[in-house]
Length: 188
Image 1 (spheres, helix red, strand yellow):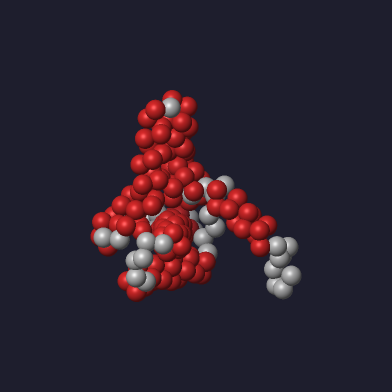
Image 2 (image 1 turned 30 degrees about the vertical axis):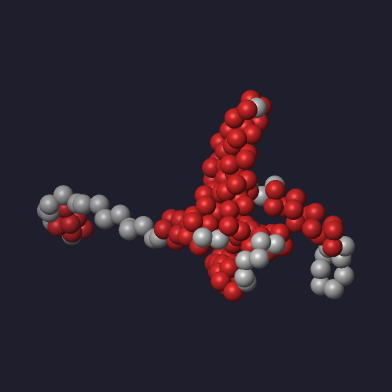
């Protein structure tokens, strides 16, 4: 157990990371938008390896068209995406260094994805497609989470600006002079 609170069992670590991903409040939003990103990336790079998430989304939609309960669950999943993202946005602690680390990790994943796409010859192997699509999932999840963290920082910065102090109350004309006169001693 070197510097890790976990058990050291690789399978247990994988299962716990998978559970954390599935029960993450941003998972529905990431899973719904990933096929669109996959389609855009596949069409921009002309790389068939990136079509996996798009084809998975199409298969889910076709399956839901023929089965009512699947369609109802899919609609509930889609409707839950934005409220869960809003909850994540509201409950997120604003830590600038954590958001910067998220952006750096996302940029590293995107750079690795671009590098592998450019330099790894497409031989149609399942390992290559799995690696590229896993990196796409990691990069997109990081981008969504870092974007929401950035929006939280912007909201925090805009919400905590000092308000202009209210102007002093206006006094009627000549009021100060009358006060000074009342402070003078009375003469008979």
